[in-house]
Length: 291
Image 1 (cartoon, one colour):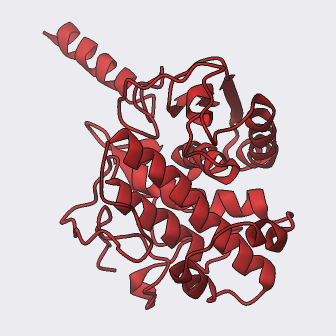
Image 2 (cartoon, helix red, strand yellow):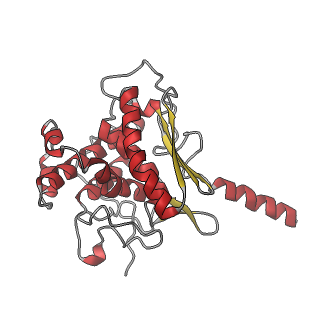
């Protein structure tokens, strides 16, 4: 009986070593049967050079941070020829991995910033902070799906963008009025442009989730998800809720160099308890703490 119980515990522990399925069946998106091989690039999507350039840049930022602050080694597995439309994060001791797939990069909704946000989401599982995914007996190592999204645009993507000529990049985009208005909370031209880029990166990804679910109602920045959860949902939120989360991360005014806490969701981000209304985690997946 004791051996049986031990075996069950070991199996359950193995289940929680990955933030998502190890082979990308579930990851930043739920299980899907879409497969986009090399050579089947639609309008939009990335080239192999862009795929590697973006990974290089994010990896160069976070490899030293994870080594210094977490005593762990980050590696990014580059599966360009694999047509899987997903990405995942996993940990084995101090070896922390992010797996990226060419199929996702080749999807027609994916922009450069959208793809960078995918990598940021997966890094967010590693270091994005609380709330964490719940395991059988406690919280797991992985930040939950909503928090990984929120970390993606509020922290990681800003580090990715901060040395770019953001004003020039944004000048080539169509920025919705709602995004322009909300991003005006920032004071410098560069901060405003980074906010706008973050919002549009979120739209790129949200449109991917929208397409994979075959939804008909368009996603918009000015039609937030009205759902209010009674407990924090660790799973993938609905596409509009995820867009709201990316947008909130983009407009959160807490400095991106302020670290997330791995135990306290209120540290390092915008919070209602601090009197903030914009830039906070959306209630469609997050239940705020009372204090």
